[in-house]
Image (tube, rainbow, N blue to C red; front, side, top):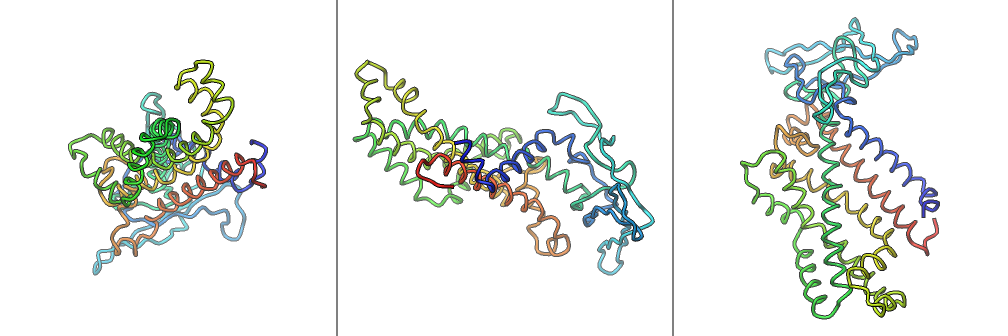
Length: 349
């Protein structure tokens, strides 16, 4: 299976991108050039500062950015920024900056990259002068972890209910399948919204976070349950399963020791393809105001700043978090396709 997956070049590339994403959000305090709460009212809605390698027609080995100067229009009260080529800020690695505590435990003040003086806003700033790139990196910690935690809960529910339905069959299977069909017949987004409204607004950020994870899991387990049910129905008549039954093995041992391992690769592929739905669910709920709220930081929360047409027209860089959502979803889909093809003995990559 590993060899077949490695031949799927797009899937391997996407897996590498996901590894980079999760590595960045895992060490977000170190990777991000600024703290997510760092703000400067002198640079509100400042456009991105592009990285440059050429100065006065000459190539520079060390990348740098030019500073920007804002000027307030007395008629429109809009700040217009212009590049000031007299302010050159070289980009360095391992630069001291905002103090932080890695994972809330390890104190530090060294960041992966930054400038020793001046500003470095590669993706611009928001309405409070906060660095969009730093907030994207910190926000990815929530948005990407929602998918993993949600899938973990969906895995448990889907395996249990799908296994019971496929192994025992009969009336039990009939009832479970009707429940699954009812859940799948309801549009997903309204169902998410209905559950989200039930969350108390007095809950803390952590409580709402886990509440969103549970909501997405309660809606997302049906697909895996059907996959498991179909596999169990095809495997329960196999000779090795019947032999285990004749030897007096318990149903739990037969299911978890003999049947599940035989199609574990298919389960992994199915779970991988389900992660994008979880990420998109959290992003959608936070975007419409029914999920996480400030001071929590997620990609959906960041996209709320781009809801107004006027803001979007003047500050299009606020849509950049949406680009990361799209990239993450596409990567998970391609990786899932690669795993599914690698697990299929009849597929030819």
